[in-house]
Length: 372
Image 1 (tube, rainbow, N blue to C red):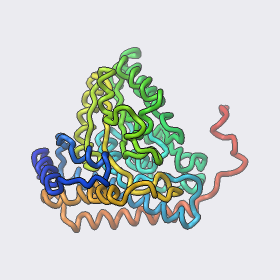
Image 2 (image 1 turned 180 degrees about the horizontal axis):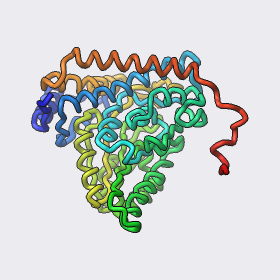
Image 3 (image 1 turned 90 degrees about the vertical axis):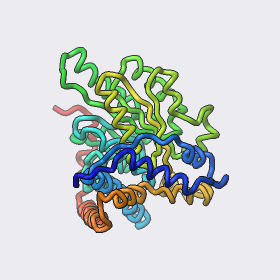
Image 4 (image 1 turned 45 degrees about the vertical axis):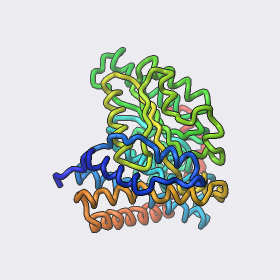
């Protein structure tokens, strides 16, 4: 398809959607009010091929997570499992705007979908969640510690903020190779993902300072879903608009609709362009929402029904589907075919993980100590 979903059309669609439902019930919460009042950002223009690629990636993430929930409740998966349902536009919007196996990525404990967007095969991710030797971390990491050197995924991290200094180091490496070692082609950009709760800890501010000081090529991607486990973001920080904190360090900051993959992709493209040009870091705050509790052990009783309903109506996958169809870039049959193919991938990765071997007990200390 040669037709494109242009920024003008996308903005018109977004404005029409917003004006159709202006009133936000107070019970939906301040996060919903802020989302509703977002200044329309310039979204990315995509071709039909690109639009279907984005839809495929988000659908893979959603259906993978749904299958994880099923396996967890069936007793096939253990430990803490944090699902990403609802936030797919952030992972897809940022990672698919970057160069896979060239740029670098750091995740959080909610890392399954980031790994999939990076290109880690679903078989390897599901195997890791089952603790199998065929997992991307060889069965040693589990849900919160996915890692893939091949796909430049520098890890998921159980403790908040741990991945940000690692991402900073990757960005510093890219700059050092270019400036100190003379490698002109060293233009890799790093994306560090973390949540709103992480923005109240020291590592966040220290890394913003160093990134701005050395103009490092890094995107600090805040997935602001309002809730840090059970703590309302607005009760935990002096300024809930996280993107504004960039100004204190003299770096670019932007807030964007984290339920709109084209808006996220557009913001990411702008930040990536600045980073590759040597203009330094960007603090990108994505207003989003998780559709499930903090983890599968969370009964999700703290959030109001009206709040959940508000965000459910803004499902990022449904929004993209509607826009692709309205723009003539895809048909319902095209999207159904993608969903069918994704279902086959999910069924295959579960079958593969169930049949995969457990790690060999004799290799308990492998990957811990240096080997000859």
